[in-house]
Image (cartoon, rainbow, N blue to C red; front, side):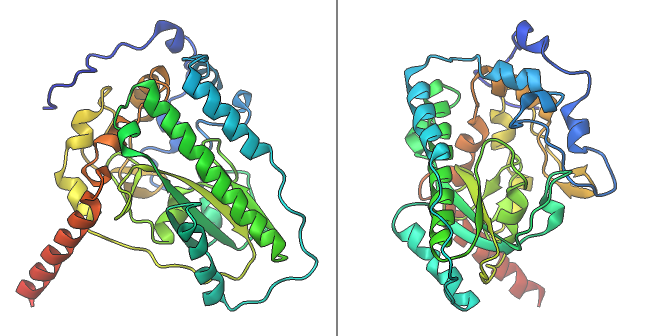
Length: 330
């Protein structure tokens, strides 16, 4: 039994419901499918007319279209997206893989992003029908300002989400530009629009953390309160390692995001999705509230890991617990 929630009961706008397609978003995502297949774009298509939920995506754009904060941040982000990359240098800089990866720390140190990692490209991460010639992916994370995101689902939180998508795009284009200057081709991948490749699987592979019950990544330092971008490249980076902090076990026993979700879209148990058992959010329940509040973000704001300073303490506590249990079992 879920607890009380100030946003329940939730009734979707009838005009929004009129835009819904006949096919379930969960079906497109592969909920209940026992065999692997590549993901399909279910939302945030660069061309909404290409997807069944395109009318709903267009309806999203009609919510608070003249909100001053949203107008300003959209214009700022668009300038970032439109800015050209530097020309590709004729000679390739040479470093060993470890040195290439170490060089990425400068982008965190200078504040371009808050976390960064590298993984070898797995073509299973590509959306159906997509391909890439690049062998490596640099994944970038930028953290939300907690005071702004904690106002979710108010417009202030929606503007903060879009601001961080802009910051993530700037980081990806900055890194891609740096690689061009080093003589290595690079393709920045920016959200929220779907590109060639999904971003959560490579973020998991390169050490960002673990998937949370709310369907978003949880990292040790940023919790779930961040956005991703990436850069595809052939520059010979050394991959960074996956990291576990006991988050998966924590989520099994935590119901905070589940209780906080107004449309009750967060499953209490893992689901099978395209051959993999994992945490999954009911797309059809989530989307109407998400659309109507211009992005929601309640679940990531409510996540205990997202509160400033809490994640590292939780991770350390869970590590001590795991060590103690390991000693008891020996």
